[in-house]
Image (cartoon, rainbow, N blue to C red; front, side, top):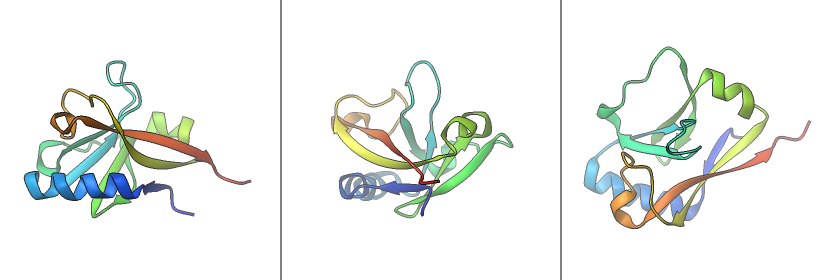
Length: 109
């Protein structure tokens, strides 16, 4: 089972953002300001650190998460979706009137 997936709606938005901004990178936020939103950046604008791990690829874009946060999510499959509303202030989908949202499903044991 894949660790991270994207809905058709998310993939459609990703393609739109790629056409505007080029290659993208996602980071599953755990910060106080944006809750647990997947943040979307131009790939060259986000520096992946030693404390980040690659969860997978959505569309053709990598998605990362901090190792400490991953300990809380490691037993789940993350499903990246899109809902109406305002995204994180630095996330590229903000001007589109929608935001990425992470849904999760516990992996069977």
